[in-house]
Length: 500
Image 1: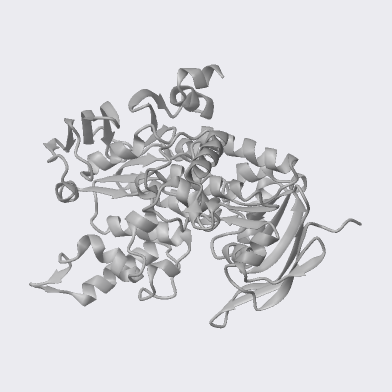
Image 2: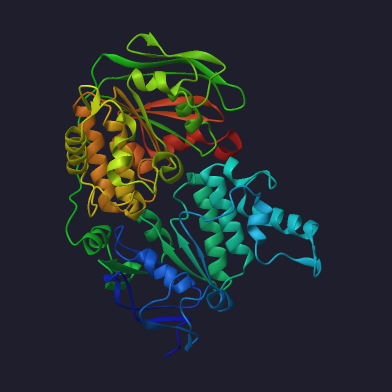
């Protein structure tokens, strides 16, 4: 029997006495695409941090080609060919792509002189390989999440690693960008690179993986060939119970128009955007990353000022470029980037939930601690947020619970219009089902909801109507009956993309 490229034996890790991993063992073969699955909090992040050298396990061993390596040392891991591309990048956001790709191992002409032309050429070649066109000198903080993700992938590819750990690599990518990434992953596999692939998107796992390992509560559940497990089996192994598939509920939409957008235009971002939202209606806004979807949401909410056009809420026009006015009129925006824009991570769970209503929860002229506590407890209960207490920092929560927290912050103002930008990015299958139920319940209660998502099954499952954007304009509208993935992509892709 041949020796696997990588073998994990009885890996365990505790934080302050709390077990994050307990006796986890499995192997990865050379050139294998191995999926790692589990709910948020199952131990996946701890495992990949142990493998990539970010944290040191309390017990167990890691073997490469049959020989043990010292876990908990990034340089040792990289020397063994193990590199992780994490879901939330720790890149230098104020620097450009070239610097971020080569930081720490810059090619040099001499001991003191960087070979910047070579860095530029190699960085451009990597981005060309990914099919991504970005300004390599532009600071990462000015790029979209998808573009920042592509820079991280380019950095990982530049290492020519033997094991590439990919944590939610498609979370911010469009369907076309995802297929480009899949092509690259398969090419790496042919070249003998192993991939440890972590994703909450089950369809990706079934499309790519050779085998799948499932973790639950920090323990190994099972490792199986992907051909020996069904979708329902995989969900049941991850969550420990069945999540019964439900048909899309009947539309709760009424005839009352709550939001009307008329010929909204912002130079260089989008043009002549017109649509309406009715009470109880869920409208999906689909399209490729970069089509202008998030920019439209930002202008409606007043984060960015449109050059022309109007936004009205129940007939009253909003002041352009004023978030305060939008909030007063009942518009709420849960942004795509929950960690940088949706929450203040060092603050407590309670403080984040109260951010949108600070100063308005009062008894007389004074803030009411009792009323604030009641609001927090109600939100945690209704949204099924799992937190040790309302006093813990938001950054201690799993991705799914952070997303529900970002949603709860805005539900506290009882909005008329709710805009959700990538509402389930990077959350597990259980949390995703819970968020869907929340959206559906809000619709039944009369909420007008606009959902922006790159996850086509999500858009199809939740939307009464779907608007599709292409290159800054609305290229078409589909009813629930008309909508399917092929119809959405036909409207989203440019003409040359459709022909191809």
